[in-house]
Length: 303
Image (cartoon, rainbow, N blue to C red):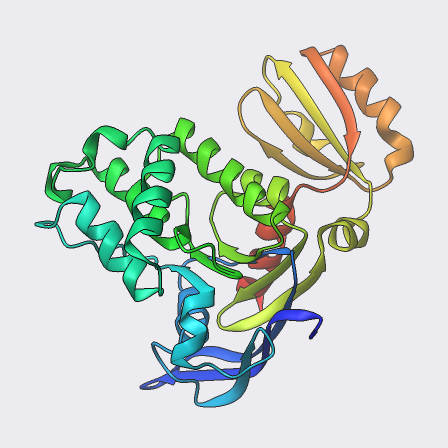
């Protein structure tokens, strides 16, 4: 068996005078979750649409489960597009039947699996309701259900947490991890770095169509080094950025992520902090994925 569920080699896509994807290569191993990250307009959605053969690359190759795209392969893929779309006049049961049949499922299997998933998402009472009667969040959950109902081998999720409240974000996160345990390979994009950091095995980051990061999460964190301190605090922390041994500060009001030039100076920092603010927590840590993301995007903006 091929070692990779998904292989992209040197993808290029131009729209008019803009290069949306510029020589992007990536690989997703079987049973792995890969986070495809980048700012708005970086080329993430275009890349996913090329994987699904919705648009064709101008050059480069795509292999899914060791094969080039074909209609037969569609049954093995679950795709959640960024732009959601369900037939609003259809009943929930009809939507499940429609998408299940598209993926080669039998009616009895669709009904059984559909009711199981609706219950998991607290939507079982909407079986005979029309899609237009659902709230936006409920419709988002239904869209996720039709993406996974056929137990695909590869999941391609474009902003899977979009439009969901914190409770349902947790539910989708748990199901993504559940699918990973079943051996399903997953590539997803998101702007929620905290969730990406908890979920992914590997990261590919693209900016302005170009790949700027590629590696396992542990490798990327090691590259930035353990020079960071996370501080929970109360008080006026504005002085921290002016300390000569502090390289950078990301301040969230009651928590700071501080990058030191030398981690050996952490005790000096702690002494300075406790003399001027109330410190509730102080932890030496690696760079967060959010920090890495912002650093890389800012580097790109400066070039």
